[in-house]
Image (cartoon, rainbow, N blue to C red; front, side):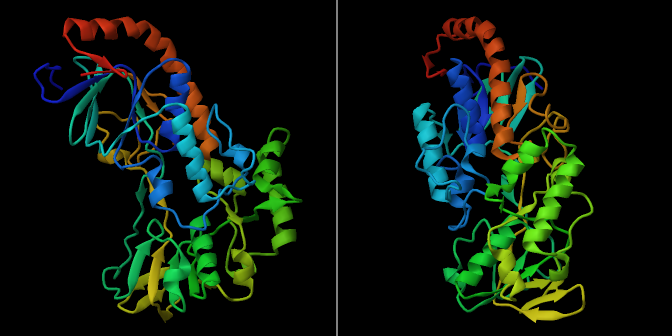
Length: 410
């Protein structure tokens, strides 16, 4: 790396951490920092906060967990919100959160490169407009920044409509259509259910084993029960209990073509990040044949798909419920902190902190609860450093005749 040069065009000094991403993770860590008196700057490539929620989710989406497990630090959900808030209610909550803490991201700032400069000792973050410099960089783009588009032979040949669930909004666009849904996670199940309710004919591809649990057991959320039990029992005992109740309430899913993994649902989630499906009605539609279960896809054809069992089917549309991935490898450079998949190499619960002022939030594979814990840890760690660094920042701006506006020296 070369040294920092004052003559570099359009560079901005940030008197506090740079946060990349204005989703729930970025908002949470910004709020926790502000609560401690530490300014920050959020860079967001989109034109709004929480763009994944606002622009890439289907209309019927609700939080899968009770609201108390999905609220950000220092600010509760409104009491009149239901137990499982809708997508629009959650977005409203996030907007209120940003307003409450006076969080104002810089929108339409797509980070092209972020790298630590060993010579000057600061992070250099390049967007299409500016180069930002700071002592701290917080990666808050999370696990779900980009849609995963699988490489299926023949996928470019299909003549019908092909989309990822990030584009899907409602089954109203597919009335009376025969639709192939590739993927059987929470999104695949809910999209298939939504298609059913709009008189479409969904066929859901189940390639691998999957855990399906009722969303609630005995009138209490399954997640709440699991969280309580793991405090007192070994994880495998908790998993056995959850599966026992699931089999009693849902019946054997194996008979429906939905094989359960050998590893229990919570143990599997902790080890791989693979989330169990919390059933909200799709299973009943599978049982009566309104959602057809299909084996893995071998090849996409012009008019449909050829499956691993040798059978073929014609479909009007194909929806890819194939999930999301981190986009960190595309812009974060010069460090081996992340894996090739863009996840911290250090496992939970210590993956939130790297070297040279690097932090990550939203990569725990433990939802917003994990995000909240990371945000608090990061704010606590940076606050101690920032108080010592504050004097340097003022001197840096003063000696270079730079103004200080909202924590940014221009």
